[in-house]
Amino acid sequence: GPKVLQIPSHQIIDMGQMVTLNCDPVSNHLYFYWYKQILGQQMEFLVNFYNGKVMEKSKLFKDQFSVERPDGSYFTLKIQPTALEDSAVYFCASSLRDWGGGQNTLYFGAGTRLSVL
Amino acid sequence: QQKVQQSPESLSVPEGGMASLNCTSSDRNFQYFWWYRQHSGEGPKALMSIFSDGDKKEGRFTAHLNKASLHVSLHIRDSQPSDSALYFCAVSPYQGGRALIFGTGTTVSVSP
Image (cartoon, rainbow over all chains, first blue to last red; front, side):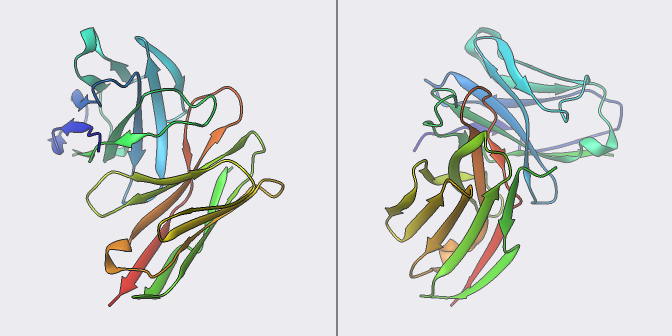
């Protein structure tokens, strides 16, 4: 089936540093998402992105977070500066269409485990 | 407050048995339901969606939706060890908004 690739699989950084998580979405998909999961528990929505713009973001999407997809390349999540509470697994997802009609499927990558020391 | 509650938190099923999972949305704006499954070390993968009242069957998986109560269940027939995973119910809004909201999850363990 369709594959979403996330790079790297694990990232360790010191608190206060900047980190960029990379996502290679399914090639013909148009909508992109980031979710956060702590300790294998609930998946929490961060942000979704379409046509170069953030469509929706949650309260978890702090000012230190930003997303972009320059020129159709990787969809990235940047955290600057990082905090201890940012330690989690971050999942990227993509879909062909949006959720307005509830008709589409989100395809997830395998996640990037971020450890902030 | 939590929009999507799942029960039970965890479930043990013998191989070949039936697993039953429950999910309730607390927001009437969120009434498009999905079931996702996440194996350890992987991202969630969509199992099935259900948008209309009644049952929907896909292979060994059957979902049942009651829109009046915003309750959906998932039944796994003839459970296999490979069904051991974290199961999420997820909901999307009826109109507007594009975030898919995940429930609290149910861990299913199928023992041989």
